[in-house]
Length: 277
Picture 1: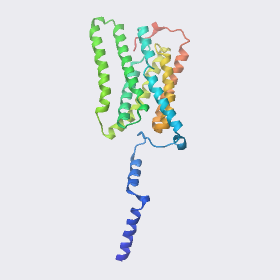
Picture 2: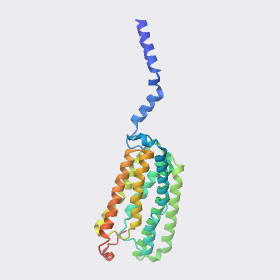
Picture 3: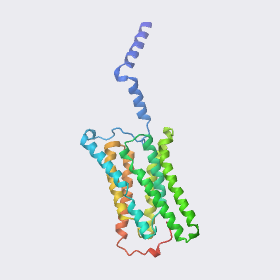
Picture 4: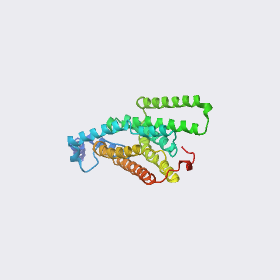
């Protein structure tokens, strides 16, 4: 009886120490099973793995990522120039840029802490700062429209304080660390916020039957950037959750482009706009 027991114990010991049942493998499988479906990973999850091994595809993806970063450094400048030239921000939704900046900040924090390749997210820093400038312009022309010129100095001080706080918030992305669970929550919230930010502008255009002072160049750059991000995500991140978020953003930006093409041929009655921002 004791010999049989010893044989069973020895058999279990031999099987446990076999290469196919090594401990790191078991731990790796358990971690993979416990990982939430929305957590961004840099592992293969698409059937065309053979294409990802091609250096040409990877180099092309990196080049596209660099081009997106380069274009994003000025792709909202046409919107800023249009607002300043027209001295008006009618038809532009403040909620869109506020929600977009919150979502971009969450996404930036997660990408930096997860140590993603910087060419997959660095353009968001430029977009974050440009959105901050647009928000300042929206506030500035809102004050002018209400004819509160007596508080002009206070208005400029508030704008300076707001822009400095944007720079400070970007510097905090590298200095503050959160537990992994909080990072997952931020990542999970960033994509819905970025996509939902387009909805107020779509509703604003529908209500006014005009796109107001929206820049067509900025809308075109947004569509091109979404298409480029689909390619870089397929090659470098290969995450279905992130890819689905980009497709939703592409669809919403396409709706904005369709609204511009639909309403631009109509006579613009800016005087009929309600005083919204």
